[in-house]
Length: 302
Image (cartoon, rainbow, N blue to C red):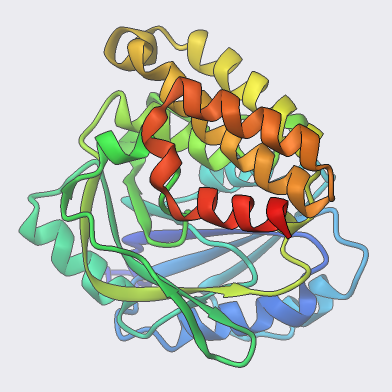
């Protein structure tokens, strides 16, 4: 975690950032890491087949910690897996190319690792803002083990999550393009079946930027339901997950059905939205009381 005998920085954190046509965003993301108070890291930028000027933008940055790699487009899961194999740090932090790390992001992660005695998996706190910097949503604190909550919904994105390099021997991101949008949850669930998913989230260290071009805003209800089938398929093929959490598959499916209902109602397919919403209630009745359900019902009756 310091300078070695050759005069080079010993890398402790590997930040893997997949990007596709995000030249205007990613420069801000990279800059947020170059302003970190903790210096012992590498930025692994995986250009997932961009056809904009991403390469030129990144190659103009003169900092040896910034490492650029181009590959054929295969979606984020494959890009993250590709970047992880190139990592040299003790911990990996997968970060989205249109979000921001606050200056304390890696400093707090380093302190947390010391406090928790080198955990295999942990996450810090994060918040959501619009493009103008206005706070949209601040996540509720989980504190402690987040495994149970994770079985009900994917309550975090990759930005605040840190995983020890040894987890790569157990779990990697899937490269299935059809899973895009749910590959994070699958990865998180498989990690949680093997380790405590520790929420050390009192300190907010990163920000998710909500904008119209975010990929998660562009899926149809039918696509969400197909992802639900794939998610269940891959989880059922994971013997470790099934042994630990196999009886909780219904809560995972309920969340995806509810998400599908939201996308259907935004497509003005109210009948299909109602159908999926009722299925989600049957699988997990507690979803009747969540905020998304109220939003869906509001859309349906208007």
